[in-house]
Length: 142
Image 1 (cartoon, rainbow, N blue to C red):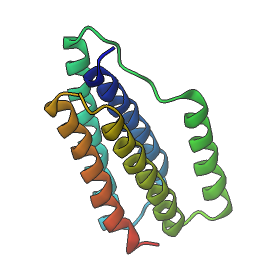
Image 2: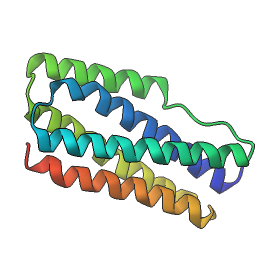
Image 3: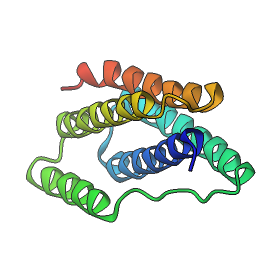
Image 4: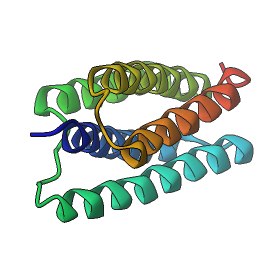
């Protein structure tokens, strides 16, 4: 499998994880700025997910789901932390961790799949930029 497909699969799985995580914390958010920023990032991720999906179809490749254990651990962490402290500070802390993990993972994949197409690299960079932007907003809510 070529680097482009591998990178697109990782991007697709990453944005799915991001959209799911944001959706899980949204009911706990009352601050309008935070809600707007989370929704914007979720929409950007969904759009980039659609784009990666279409590109993977063009390569006759399947999308990749986030690893089931990673998904389960994320869900447990979100539910557990919000059960202990249902606050926007907790939401900001959880989402900061998620953004950092996404940036770290996608940066690793960009380095690993050096021969990927420029278009797929740009998608990965756009996801990273979206998560870094959200991270900047989240800091004021910690």
